[in-house]
Amino acid sequence: MPAEAPRLLAGQRSAPSAYDADITILCLGRLEETKTAIESALTQRGGRFRVSVLDQGSDADMLHALAARFGQRPGFALYAAAENRGVAAGRNMLAALGHGRMIVGLDNDARFADEYVVAGALRRFENTPELGAIGFCILAADGQGPDLTSWGYPKALLPRHRGRFAATTFVGAGHAIRRAAWQAVGGYDESFFFTWEEYDFCLAAIARGWRVAYDGQLAVIHAPAAEGRVRWQGARMVHFIRNRLVIARKWRQGWLALAPWLLGYGLIAARHGCFGAAWAGMRQGCAAPVAAPRKMPEAMRDYIRAYETRPRGTLFTRLRLELFSRLPV
Image 1 (cartoon, rainbow, N blue to C red):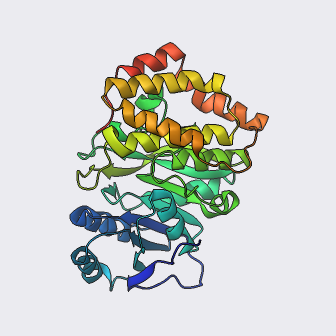
Image 2 (image 1 turned 30 degrees about the vertical axis):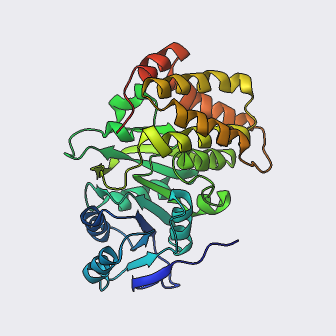
């Protein structure tokens, strides 16, 4: 059954005329952080941009506050969804509400590091026709170094957090997607309520010939808010394991290939007291329906080997870096 279309609470829907980018923000609570994120988005320069915010269940006071603060600003729209359907479905809704050539995602507890981040992403897309998505540098709250809780790339690449490299995913806190790539893939898999939705999207894009890049010169500052945060000891680990298994099944990865991965994450979960959640995720991941699983094209395999497998190092290196490290907050 199709989801109910979100209601426009304040601002203006996008006009049919062409523009460069939709800057999109999902929110659920976190009023002050959301205000900061929106203000940061509205002050982006160097192109024709629109800012769209989709609320997925905040109280009426927060919605009134956002409408009063930003409702009269040009190029802004505040929407409310009928229910919280998760990150993937929420981003799909926001993308469908606009038609900018680029879709920029910003977490509601993050802000752009300067006024020309979106313009910089636009230039990257214009100069690289095969580029489908860009991951931004996610800086810690003080803006001085990388937010280690938001590093979604091989750890060996961490010293290059202010540089550029090819990638197989991006981190949702700050990113940009070429709308043509978004349309080719069909957006996010909406069964992914939370975690791994970016990697799943990127694999589908790579299979269609698009490329993914990390650009450390395009940065957002992330101050993770405690309010509404999903903890590893509960639902976060369930979604994490479930969704990674679904991705593996989509691309016909056999149990032999998955066994080290499952064992590794099982040990990590046991070490941090959340093995029960990991086990629930494994059961859900095995039971989830997967339509039309396919084998990875050889060019896609080569891309993943070059930009994900090799930088991550040997199994021993991965265990040393991941098994004996602490889970992010």
